[in-house]
Length: 96
Figure 1 (tube, rainbow, N blue to C red):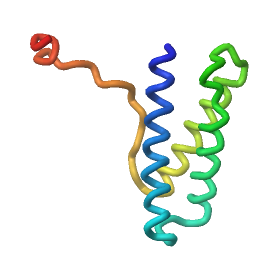
Figure 2 (figure 1 turned 180 degrees about the vertical axis):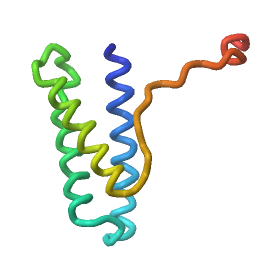
Figure 3 (figure 1 turned 135 degrees about the horizontal axis):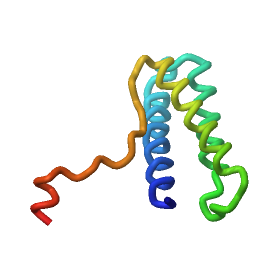
């Protein structure tokens, strides 16, 4: 379960890094509301207790991250969803 959570957090972090870079290149790339949501997701990702999976707040923080991420994606008019790691194809399994 820890790997899956880490993978999902990594997905959100990588999207956040791209959006932050875009803002650095063009300050007008996103609206003030989107920029605020990006900052809030960054704060939530930083506050996620990676080293303490027993923390009672992990589920609540993850739900907030997912909600803010959907808000940003909708505001930008893009369809980005974390769908988990894709299952290996039959060919990939045969090649192993």
